[in-house]
Length: 284
Image 1: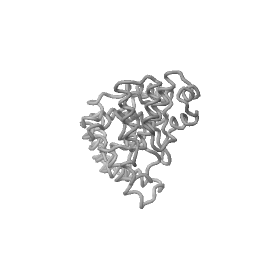
Image 2: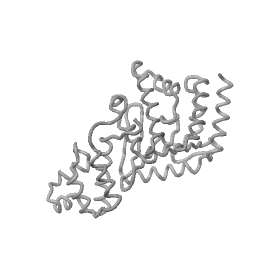
Image 3: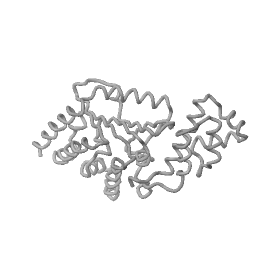
């Protein structure tokens, strides 16, 4: 899966990029439609990703009007050609409350903050199963497939064009007893190993950092090649919210920067993980 792409997400990315280009040039949908002799509805449908197969000629007309040339033009025309077919994740589509695996696979960088749980891309099978089985929300027959899908998501980090992951986690995540000390010790040892991955940066916000602006909850910032806008992803157990609004994304960038600045450096973060893993080991 790591080497493929998601046509659905590429259509979404193309739509968002075209909408951003129009906004950046201060043009109304009506004025663009008039210049191209399109209906306004045709333009707004393309910007809302309400098209099945984007036409290269339509995208070229928009790029000509917006004055997009060079690498940016080539990139957007490449997205247009690739926006066909089905996702590499189609076999797990029923398990995800949104397009998260596809977005992760398409991103060039992911920055995430977690306050309560180990990030999904860094979980062990035992830890993931404990999360899914808690509370009886996930049907028992779905647990194994959900664990498999979560482990498969990690393949994006090994893909040549996969994203960089910068993960900031709260100390509480490391101390929360998920299922058993054995499960937690295994999970934290695995975290230590993943921290050495060339695409992963792992940082811990210690308790003594005090209050910070990210305490309201976890989120991920997914970034894509220029000139595409970023996306904020906020997930719960039943749904995922994906927001492309520029002001909303910028606000979360500021929040992430704030909590990132409070975190321990990578070496001290690993030292803290090691000490808490040792505490779980003693309880095992």
